[in-house]
Amino acid sequence: MNPSSFLTSPKNIIAVLLLLPLFSLTQETPASTELYRPQFHFTPHKGWMNDPNGMVYFNGKYHLFFQHNPDSTVWGPMHWGHAVSRDLVHWEELPIALYPDSLGTIFSGSAVIDSANTAGFGKNAMVAIYTNHNATLEKTGSDKFQNQSIAYSPDEGSSWIKYKKNPVLLNPGIRDFRDPKVFWYRPGKKWILTLATLDHITFYSSPDLKHWTEESRFGKNLGAHGGVWECPDLFALDDHGHPVWVLIVNLNPGGPNGGSATQYFTGSFDGHSFTPDDARIKWLDYGPDEYAGITWSGTGDRKIFLGWMSNWQYANRVPTQNWRSAMTLPRDLSIKKINDQYRIASLPVKEFSKTLHPVQQLSNRIVKNDLDLKSVTEGTFQLDLEGLSRTDFTIELSNTEGNKLAIGFDKKANRYFIDRTHSGSTDFSEVFAGKHVAPRLSSSQFINLKMIVDVASVELFADNGLTVMTSIFFPKQPFTNIRVKPANPLRIKELKLSKIHLPK
Ligand code: FRU
Image (cartoon, rainbow, N blue to C red; front, top):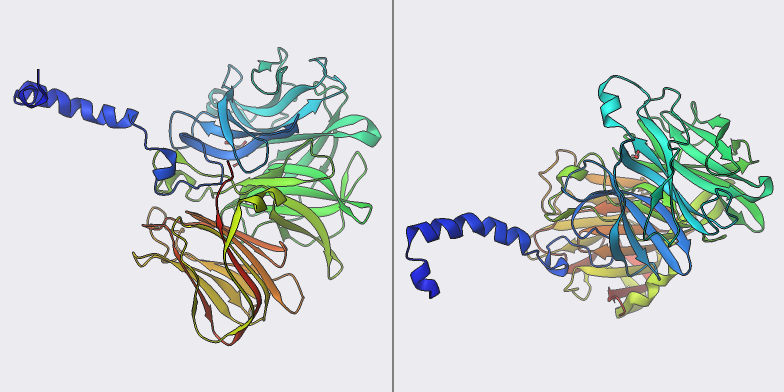
Protein backbone atom coordinates (compact mmCIF):
# COMPACT_ATOMS: atom_id res chain seq x y z
CA MET A 1 0.00 0.00 0.00
CA ASN A 2 1.34 3.44 -0.80
CA PRO A 3 1.56 5.84 2.19
CA SER A 4 -0.95 8.38 0.88
CA SER A 5 -3.73 5.77 0.44
CA PHE A 6 -2.86 4.34 3.88
CA LEU A 7 -3.57 7.73 5.43
CA THR A 8 -6.97 8.20 3.75
CA SER A 9 -8.60 5.71 6.13
CA PRO A 10 -9.75 7.39 9.42
CA LYS A 11 -8.89 4.16 11.27
CA ASN A 12 -5.33 4.29 10.00
CA ILE A 13 -4.99 7.98 10.86
CA ILE A 14 -6.11 7.28 14.44
CA ALA A 15 -3.62 4.40 14.65
CA VAL A 16 -0.79 6.64 13.45
CA LEU A 17 -1.76 9.40 15.89
CA LEU A 18 -1.80 6.90 18.75
CA LEU A 19 1.57 5.50 17.79
CA LEU A 20 3.29 8.85 17.20
CA PRO A 21 4.16 9.61 20.84
CA LEU A 22 5.60 6.10 21.19
CA PHE A 23 7.68 6.59 18.11
CA SER A 24 9.06 9.92 19.29
CA LEU A 25 9.96 8.43 22.68
CA THR A 26 12.04 5.73 21.09
CA GLN A 27 13.68 8.18 18.67
CA GLU A 28 16.08 9.67 21.19
CA THR A 29 17.49 13.08 20.43
CA PRO A 30 21.22 12.75 19.81
CA ALA A 31 23.01 13.93 22.97
CA SER A 32 24.91 16.75 21.28
CA THR A 33 21.78 18.43 19.88
CA GLU A 34 19.84 18.61 23.15
CA LEU A 35 19.50 22.26 24.16
CA TYR A 36 21.04 22.05 27.65
CA ARG A 37 23.26 18.99 27.27
CA PRO A 38 26.80 19.91 28.40
CA GLN A 39 29.60 18.95 26.02
CA PHE A 40 32.37 18.04 28.46
CA HIS A 41 30.71 17.58 31.85
CA PHE A 42 29.50 14.09 32.64
CA THR A 43 25.75 13.56 32.26
CA PRO A 44 23.88 10.25 32.23
CA HIS A 45 22.60 9.29 28.82
CA LYS A 46 19.06 9.22 30.23
CA GLY A 47 17.29 9.36 33.57
CA TRP A 48 18.01 11.03 36.86
CA MET A 49 21.45 11.50 38.48
CA ASN A 50 22.57 12.98 41.80
CA ASP A 51 25.69 12.39 43.96
CA PRO A 52 28.96 11.01 42.63
CA ASN A 53 29.66 7.66 44.34
CA GLY A 54 32.42 5.09 44.57
CA MET A 55 35.01 7.18 42.81
CA VAL A 56 38.12 5.04 42.53
CA TYR A 57 41.15 5.00 40.25
CA PHE A 58 42.48 1.60 39.20
CA ASN A 59 44.55 0.24 36.31
CA GLY A 60 44.57 3.52 34.40
CA LYS A 61 40.82 4.13 34.73
CA TYR A 62 38.88 6.64 36.79
CA HIS A 63 35.62 5.03 37.85
CA LEU A 64 32.67 7.26 38.56
CA PHE A 65 29.57 5.66 40.01
CA PHE A 66 26.56 7.85 40.67
CA GLN A 67 23.15 8.01 42.28
CA HIS A 68 20.86 7.08 39.45
CA ASN A 69 17.19 6.55 38.74
CA PRO A 70 17.34 5.03 35.26
CA ASP A 71 13.57 4.94 34.74
CA SER A 72 12.70 8.55 35.39
CA THR A 73 14.10 12.07 35.27
CA VAL A 74 13.19 12.70 38.92
CA TRP A 75 14.73 11.20 42.05
CA GLY A 76 13.39 7.72 42.87
CA PRO A 77 14.67 4.22 43.66
CA MET A 78 18.41 4.68 43.74
CA HIS A 79 20.84 2.55 41.74
CA TRP A 80 24.55 3.07 41.19
CA GLY A 81 25.15 4.14 37.62
CA HIS A 82 28.69 3.70 36.31
CA ALA A 83 31.03 5.58 33.99
CA VAL A 84 34.77 5.45 33.34
CA SER A 85 37.39 7.76 31.99
CA ARG A 86 41.07 7.33 31.23
CA ASP A 87 41.81 11.06 31.23
CA LEU A 88 39.09 12.75 33.36
CA VAL A 89 37.88 14.46 30.18
CA HIS A 90 36.15 11.75 28.10
CA TRP A 91 33.55 9.70 29.95
CA GLU A 92 31.99 6.44 28.85
CA GLU A 93 28.78 5.36 30.55
CA LEU A 94 28.68 1.65 31.38
CA PRO A 95 25.83 -0.63 32.49
CA ILE A 96 24.31 -0.01 35.92
CA ALA A 97 26.55 -1.41 38.67
CA LEU A 98 24.26 -1.83 41.70
CA TYR A 99 20.50 -2.41 41.75
CA PRO A 100 18.13 -2.10 44.71
CA ASP A 101 17.70 -5.33 46.68
CA SER A 102 15.72 -6.73 49.61
CA LEU A 103 17.73 -4.53 52.03
CA GLY A 104 16.76 -1.37 50.21
CA THR A 105 17.79 1.01 47.47
CA ILE A 106 21.45 1.92 46.97
CA PHE A 107 22.29 5.31 48.46
CA SER A 108 25.65 7.10 48.34
CA GLY A 109 28.96 5.57 49.30
CA SER A 110 32.51 4.91 48.20
CA ALA A 111 34.73 2.25 46.64
CA VAL A 112 38.26 1.05 47.38
CA ILE A 113 40.70 -1.42 45.85
CA ASP A 114 41.47 -4.08 48.44
CA SER A 115 45.03 -4.71 47.29
CA ALA A 116 45.95 -6.74 50.40
CA ASN A 117 42.76 -8.84 50.17
CA THR A 118 41.76 -7.91 53.72
CA ALA A 119 38.12 -8.82 53.02
CA GLY A 120 38.91 -12.16 51.36
CA PHE A 121 37.11 -11.20 48.14
CA GLY A 122 40.35 -11.62 46.18
CA LYS A 123 43.46 -9.53 45.67
CA ASN A 124 42.62 -6.18 44.12
CA ALA A 125 38.89 -6.70 44.42
CA MET A 126 37.00 -3.44 43.96
CA VAL A 127 34.83 -3.09 47.06
CA ALA A 128 31.86 -0.72 47.23
CA ILE A 129 30.64 0.46 50.63
CA TYR A 130 27.19 2.05 50.42
CA THR A 131 24.03 2.82 52.33
CA ASN A 132 21.05 0.52 51.93
CA HIS A 133 17.96 2.70 52.29
CA ASN A 134 14.94 0.64 53.27
CA ALA A 135 11.87 2.72 52.40
CA THR A 136 9.48 -0.01 53.58
CA LEU A 137 11.04 0.04 57.04
CA GLU A 138 10.97 3.85 57.04
CA LYS A 139 7.20 3.75 56.52
CA THR A 140 6.76 1.66 59.67
CA GLY A 141 8.13 4.56 61.74
CA SER A 142 11.44 2.87 62.52
CA ASP A 143 14.56 5.06 62.64
CA LYS A 144 16.81 2.21 61.56
CA PHE A 145 16.13 2.21 57.82
CA GLN A 146 19.62 3.22 56.68
CA ASN A 147 22.41 0.65 57.11
CA GLN A 148 25.82 0.20 55.49
CA SER A 149 26.46 -2.69 53.12
CA ILE A 150 29.26 -3.85 50.86
CA ALA A 151 29.57 -5.42 47.40
CA TYR A 152 32.63 -6.49 45.48
CA SER A 153 33.71 -6.72 41.90
CA PRO A 154 36.39 -9.15 40.77
CA ASP A 155 36.59 -7.54 37.31
CA GLU A 156 37.19 -3.82 37.78
CA GLY A 157 33.58 -2.85 38.28
CA SER A 158 31.99 -4.80 35.39
CA SER A 159 30.10 -7.26 37.58
CA TRP A 160 29.19 -7.02 41.25
CA ILE A 161 28.46 -9.49 44.02
CA LYS A 162 26.71 -8.29 47.15
CA TYR A 163 28.18 -9.62 50.41
CA LYS A 164 25.95 -12.35 51.88
CA LYS A 165 26.08 -11.02 55.43
CA ASN A 166 24.98 -7.46 54.62
CA PRO A 167 24.50 -5.06 56.25
CA VAL A 168 27.97 -4.72 57.77
CA LEU A 169 27.28 -1.62 59.87
CA LEU A 170 23.95 -1.50 61.62
CA ASN A 171 21.97 1.60 62.41
CA PRO A 172 21.81 2.35 66.15
CA GLY A 173 18.62 4.39 65.69
CA ILE A 174 19.68 7.53 63.79
CA ARG A 175 17.37 8.53 60.93
CA ASP A 176 20.16 10.04 58.82
CA PHE A 177 22.89 7.42 58.95
CA ARG A 178 24.58 7.28 55.59
CA ASP A 179 27.12 7.95 52.84
CA PRO A 180 30.17 5.92 54.01
CA LYS A 181 33.55 7.06 52.66
CA VAL A 182 36.36 4.56 53.28
CA PHE A 183 40.16 4.73 53.00
CA TRP A 184 43.10 2.61 54.15
CA TYR A 185 44.88 4.29 57.09
CA ARG A 186 48.40 3.01 56.59
CA PRO A 187 49.97 3.90 59.99
CA GLY A 188 47.23 1.99 61.84
CA LYS A 189 46.89 -0.76 59.20
CA LYS A 190 43.11 -0.46 59.17
CA TRP A 191 40.25 0.88 57.11
CA ILE A 192 38.64 4.11 58.30
CA LEU A 193 35.00 4.80 57.49
CA THR A 194 33.65 8.33 57.73
CA LEU A 195 29.88 8.40 58.08
CA ALA A 196 27.34 11.23 58.11
CA THR A 197 25.17 10.72 61.17
CA LEU A 198 22.48 13.44 61.16
CA ASP A 199 24.28 16.47 62.65
CA HIS A 200 27.77 15.08 63.14
CA ILE A 201 30.32 12.66 61.71
CA THR A 202 31.05 9.23 63.17
CA PHE A 203 34.37 7.54 62.40
CA TYR A 204 34.64 3.74 62.39
CA SER A 205 37.57 1.40 61.76
CA SER A 206 37.85 -2.14 60.42
CA PRO A 207 40.56 -4.67 59.61
CA ASP A 208 38.53 -6.28 56.81
CA LEU A 209 35.71 -3.95 55.59
CA LYS A 210 33.20 -6.33 57.23
CA HIS A 211 33.52 -5.64 60.97
CA TRP A 212 33.36 -2.04 62.07
CA THR A 213 34.17 -0.44 65.44
CA GLU A 214 33.24 3.12 66.36
CA GLU A 215 36.32 5.32 66.89
CA SER A 216 34.96 8.80 67.57
CA ARG A 217 32.40 11.48 66.74
CA PHE A 218 32.93 14.97 65.44
CA GLY A 219 31.15 18.21 64.76
CA LYS A 220 27.89 18.40 66.70
CA ASN A 221 28.71 21.93 67.76
CA LEU A 222 31.09 22.96 65.00
CA GLY A 223 30.66 24.16 61.43
CA ALA A 224 27.49 24.97 59.54
CA HIS A 225 24.30 23.23 60.71
CA GLY A 226 21.57 24.77 58.59
CA GLY A 227 20.59 21.29 57.44
CA VAL A 228 21.48 17.63 57.64
CA TRP A 229 25.11 16.50 57.25
CA GLU A 230 25.68 14.22 54.24
CA CYS A 231 28.43 12.78 52.04
CA PRO A 232 31.61 13.28 54.08
CA ASP A 233 35.21 12.63 53.06
CA LEU A 234 38.48 12.54 55.03
CA PHE A 235 41.95 12.79 53.47
CA ALA A 236 45.29 14.55 53.85
CA LEU A 237 46.73 17.28 51.63
CA ASP A 238 50.40 18.07 51.63
CA ASP A 239 51.68 21.40 52.96
CA HIS A 240 55.40 21.34 52.16
CA GLY A 241 55.89 17.83 53.52
CA HIS A 242 53.45 18.25 56.39
CA PRO A 243 50.04 16.52 56.14
CA VAL A 244 47.00 18.71 56.66
CA TRP A 245 43.86 16.62 57.16
CA VAL A 246 40.69 17.77 55.47
CA LEU A 247 37.22 16.68 56.50
CA ILE A 248 34.60 17.45 53.87
CA VAL A 249 31.00 17.59 55.07
CA ASN A 250 28.22 18.26 52.61
CA LEU A 251 25.23 20.07 54.03
CA ASN A 252 21.62 20.32 52.88
CA PRO A 253 20.12 22.89 53.21
CA GLY A 254 22.19 25.66 54.83
CA GLY A 255 24.70 26.53 52.09
CA PRO A 256 26.14 30.06 51.75
CA ASN A 257 23.79 30.86 48.85
CA GLY A 258 20.85 28.71 49.98
CA GLY A 259 20.23 24.99 49.73
CA SER A 260 22.94 22.38 49.26
CA ALA A 261 26.69 23.08 49.61
CA THR A 262 30.06 21.61 50.55
CA GLN A 263 31.82 22.76 53.73
CA TYR A 264 35.15 21.53 55.02
CA PHE A 265 37.30 21.51 58.14
CA THR A 266 41.10 21.40 58.32
CA GLY A 267 43.04 19.79 61.16
CA SER A 268 44.70 16.54 62.14
CA PHE A 269 43.71 12.87 62.29
CA ASP A 270 45.48 10.30 64.46
CA GLY A 271 43.69 7.16 63.33
CA HIS A 272 40.98 7.61 65.97
CA SER A 273 39.70 11.15 65.91
CA PHE A 274 39.76 14.33 63.87
CA THR A 275 40.91 17.52 65.63
CA PRO A 276 40.10 20.78 63.82
CA ASP A 277 42.66 23.59 63.75
CA ASP A 278 40.07 26.27 63.20
CA ALA A 279 36.45 26.80 64.21
CA ARG A 280 35.50 29.00 61.28
CA ILE A 281 33.10 27.80 58.61
CA LYS A 282 34.79 27.17 55.24
CA TRP A 283 33.12 26.41 51.92
CA LEU A 284 34.73 24.52 49.12
CA ASP A 285 32.43 26.07 46.53
CA TYR A 286 30.22 29.09 47.24
CA GLY A 287 28.00 28.75 44.19
CA PRO A 288 24.51 27.27 44.40
CA ASP A 289 25.32 24.26 42.21
CA GLU A 290 28.06 22.10 43.61
CA TYR A 291 26.91 19.42 46.03
CA ALA A 292 27.87 16.02 47.45
CA GLY A 293 31.43 16.61 46.26
CA ILE A 294 34.08 14.13 47.42
CA THR A 295 37.43 12.83 46.14
CA TRP A 296 38.69 9.81 44.19
CA SER A 297 40.38 7.05 46.10
CA GLY A 298 43.45 5.31 44.72
CA THR A 299 45.13 8.46 43.40
CA GLY A 300 47.94 8.59 45.98
CA ASP A 301 48.83 12.10 47.12
CA ARG A 302 46.86 13.67 44.30
CA LYS A 303 43.36 14.54 45.46
CA ILE A 304 40.76 14.93 42.73
CA PHE A 305 37.35 16.27 43.69
CA LEU A 306 34.06 16.06 41.81
CA GLY A 307 30.59 17.25 42.80
CA TRP A 308 27.03 17.02 41.56
CA MET A 309 26.22 20.21 39.65
CA SER A 310 22.80 20.95 41.09
CA ASN A 311 20.95 21.87 44.26
CA TRP A 312 18.18 19.99 46.06
CA GLN A 313 16.15 23.22 46.04
CA TYR A 314 15.25 22.68 42.38
CA ALA A 315 17.20 19.68 41.03
CA ASN A 316 14.02 17.73 40.25
CA ARG A 317 12.56 20.61 38.27
CA VAL A 318 15.36 21.91 36.02
CA PRO A 319 14.15 22.10 32.39
CA THR A 320 16.18 19.31 30.78
CA GLN A 321 14.33 16.55 28.98
CA ASN A 322 15.83 13.09 28.73
CA TRP A 323 18.12 13.35 31.72
CA ARG A 324 18.63 15.47 34.81
CA SER A 325 21.89 16.88 36.16
CA ALA A 326 25.56 16.97 35.29
CA MET A 327 28.69 16.57 37.41
CA THR A 328 31.19 19.40 37.92
CA LEU A 329 34.54 19.21 36.20
CA PRO A 330 37.00 17.07 38.17
CA ARG A 331 39.14 19.45 40.25
CA ASP A 332 42.63 19.15 41.70
CA LEU A 333 42.75 20.14 45.37
CA SER A 334 45.67 21.74 47.18
CA ILE A 335 46.12 23.40 50.56
CA LYS A 336 47.16 27.04 51.02
CA LYS A 337 47.83 29.10 54.11
CA ILE A 338 45.97 32.42 53.92
CA ASN A 339 46.23 34.81 56.88
CA ASP A 340 47.35 31.94 59.10
CA GLN A 341 44.37 29.82 58.12
CA TYR A 342 44.39 26.73 55.95
CA ARG A 343 42.23 26.98 52.85
CA ILE A 344 41.62 24.57 50.02
CA ALA A 345 42.28 25.77 46.51
CA SER A 346 40.54 23.88 43.71
CA LEU A 347 41.29 24.10 40.01
CA PRO A 348 40.12 22.11 37.00
CA VAL A 349 42.30 19.01 36.61
CA LYS A 350 45.39 19.65 34.51
CA GLU A 351 44.20 17.07 31.93
CA PHE A 352 41.47 19.53 30.95
CA SER A 353 43.99 21.96 29.43
CA LYS A 354 44.41 19.72 26.36
CA THR A 355 40.88 20.64 25.28
CA LEU A 356 41.68 24.35 25.01
CA HIS A 357 42.13 26.15 21.69
CA PRO A 358 42.95 29.85 22.21
CA VAL A 359 40.97 32.15 19.92
CA GLN A 360 41.73 35.55 21.42
CA GLN A 361 44.55 36.96 23.52
CA LEU A 362 45.27 40.41 24.90
CA SER A 363 48.05 41.66 27.17
CA ASN A 364 48.70 44.74 29.24
CA ARG A 365 45.48 46.60 28.48
CA ILE A 366 43.63 49.28 30.36
CA VAL A 367 39.98 48.73 29.45
CA LYS A 368 37.85 51.87 29.86
CA ASN A 369 34.78 50.97 27.81
CA ASP A 370 32.88 47.76 27.26
CA LEU A 371 35.00 45.23 25.44
CA ASP A 372 33.38 42.59 23.22
CA LEU A 373 35.30 39.37 22.88
CA LYS A 374 35.12 36.97 19.95
CA SER A 375 31.81 35.15 19.91
CA VAL A 376 31.77 31.50 20.84
CA THR A 377 29.25 29.67 18.70
CA GLU A 378 28.96 26.49 20.75
CA GLY A 379 28.33 28.22 24.09
CA THR A 380 31.39 26.48 25.54
CA PHE A 381 34.63 28.24 26.40
CA GLN A 382 37.28 29.00 28.99
CA LEU A 383 38.15 32.59 29.78
CA ASP A 384 41.36 33.27 31.69
CA LEU A 385 41.95 36.74 33.09
CA GLU A 386 45.15 37.53 34.93
CA GLY A 387 46.43 40.58 36.73
CA LEU A 388 43.10 42.39 36.92
CA SER A 389 42.97 45.54 39.02
CA ARG A 390 40.75 45.28 42.08
CA THR A 391 37.91 47.40 40.79
CA ASP A 392 34.23 46.76 40.00
CA PHE A 393 33.69 44.88 36.77
CA THR A 394 31.24 42.49 35.14
CA ILE A 395 31.75 39.84 32.50
CA GLU A 396 28.42 39.56 30.73
CA LEU A 397 27.45 36.48 28.75
CA SER A 398 24.48 36.91 26.43
CA ASN A 399 22.61 35.45 23.46
CA THR A 400 20.37 36.81 20.70
CA GLU A 401 17.26 36.07 22.82
CA GLY A 402 18.22 38.75 25.36
CA ASN A 403 19.21 36.26 28.10
CA LYS A 404 22.15 37.34 30.23
CA LEU A 405 24.47 36.02 32.87
CA ALA A 406 26.63 38.47 34.84
CA ILE A 407 29.80 37.38 36.58
CA GLY A 408 31.97 39.89 38.36
CA PHE A 409 33.65 41.55 41.29
CA ASP A 410 32.26 44.05 43.79
CA LYS A 411 35.18 45.96 45.26
CA LYS A 412 33.36 47.53 48.22
CA ALA A 413 31.99 44.21 49.42
CA ASN A 414 35.22 42.44 48.35
CA ARG A 415 33.05 39.76 46.76
CA TYR A 416 32.65 37.90 43.52
CA PHE A 417 29.17 37.39 42.15
CA ILE A 418 27.19 35.43 39.59
CA ASP A 419 23.82 36.91 38.70
CA ARG A 420 21.49 34.56 36.79
CA THR A 421 18.33 36.61 37.30
CA HIS A 422 17.88 37.15 33.53
CA SER A 423 19.65 34.01 32.35
CA GLY A 424 16.70 32.40 30.51
CA SER A 425 14.31 29.84 31.92
CA THR A 426 14.13 30.46 35.68
CA ASP A 427 10.45 30.05 36.54
CA PHE A 428 10.62 26.32 37.34
CA SER A 429 11.60 27.33 40.90
CA GLU A 430 10.97 30.43 43.01
CA VAL A 431 14.52 30.47 44.30
CA PHE A 432 16.40 29.86 41.06
CA ALA A 433 16.68 33.42 39.71
CA GLY A 434 19.04 35.55 41.75
CA LYS A 435 22.48 36.92 42.45
CA HIS A 436 24.90 34.73 44.35
CA VAL A 437 28.00 36.03 46.07
CA ALA A 438 31.29 34.71 47.43
CA PRO A 439 33.98 36.43 49.48
CA ARG A 440 37.37 37.14 48.00
CA LEU A 441 39.79 35.26 50.29
CA SER A 442 43.04 36.21 48.63
CA SER A 443 44.73 39.42 49.73
CA SER A 444 46.93 39.71 46.66
CA GLN A 445 46.86 43.01 44.83
CA PHE A 446 45.63 41.62 41.51
CA ILE A 447 42.76 39.32 40.66
CA ASN A 448 42.98 36.16 38.58
CA LEU A 449 39.87 34.53 37.16
CA LYS A 450 39.30 31.31 35.29
CA MET A 451 35.79 30.79 34.00
CA ILE A 452 34.64 27.61 32.30
CA VAL A 453 31.30 27.64 30.51
CA ASP A 454 29.64 24.52 29.13
CA VAL A 455 26.25 25.39 27.56
CA ALA A 456 24.27 25.46 30.83
CA SER A 457 26.88 25.96 33.57
CA VAL A 458 29.71 28.19 34.67
CA GLU A 459 32.50 27.29 37.06
CA LEU A 460 34.37 30.30 38.35
CA PHE A 461 37.81 29.76 39.87
CA ALA A 462 39.03 33.04 41.33
CA ASP A 463 42.51 33.73 42.73
CA ASN A 464 43.92 30.38 41.61
CA GLY A 465 41.00 28.44 43.03
CA LEU A 466 40.71 30.02 46.49
CA THR A 467 37.19 31.24 45.83
CA VAL A 468 35.11 28.93 43.65
CA MET A 469 31.52 29.31 42.45
CA THR A 470 29.48 26.91 40.35
CA SER A 471 26.19 27.96 38.82
CA ILE A 472 23.82 26.42 36.28
CA PHE A 473 21.46 28.29 33.94
CA PHE A 474 19.07 27.57 31.08
CA PRO A 475 19.21 30.21 28.31
CA LYS A 476 16.86 29.93 25.31
CA GLN A 477 19.97 29.69 23.12
CA PRO A 478 23.56 29.10 24.25
CA PHE A 479 25.48 32.17 25.39
CA THR A 480 27.70 33.09 22.47
CA ASN A 481 28.63 36.71 23.30
CA ILE A 482 31.08 37.75 25.99
CA ARG A 483 31.47 41.35 27.05
CA VAL A 484 33.88 42.76 29.66
CA LYS A 485 32.17 45.71 31.34
CA PRO A 486 34.44 47.76 33.64
CA ALA A 487 32.90 50.30 36.02
CA ASN A 488 36.25 52.10 36.18
CA PRO A 489 39.34 51.67 34.02
CA LEU A 490 40.26 48.02 34.39
CA ARG A 491 43.82 46.85 34.01
CA ILE A 492 44.14 43.44 32.39
CA LYS A 493 47.59 41.92 32.33
CA GLU A 494 46.58 38.87 30.30
CA LEU A 495 43.30 37.80 28.74
CA LYS A 496 42.93 34.48 26.99
CA LEU A 497 39.71 33.17 25.49
CA SER A 498 39.80 29.52 24.46
CA LYS A 499 37.28 27.36 22.70
CA ILE A 500 36.92 23.86 24.01
CA HIS A 501 37.11 20.82 21.77
CA LEU A 502 37.41 17.35 23.14
CA PRO A 503 40.40 15.69 21.49
CA LYS A 504 39.48 12.34 19.88
C1 FRU B 1 22.85 13.65 49.08
C2 FRU B 1 21.97 12.46 49.40
C3 FRU B 1 22.71 11.44 50.22
C4 FRU B 1 21.97 10.17 49.92
C5 FRU B 1 21.62 10.35 48.48
C6 FRU B 1 20.32 9.75 48.08
O1 FRU B 1 22.49 14.34 47.94
O2 FRU B 1 20.79 12.89 50.04
O3 FRU B 1 22.79 11.76 51.59
O4 FRU B 1 22.75 9.03 50.15
O5 FRU B 1 21.58 11.75 48.24
O6 FRU B 1 20.14 9.79 46.71
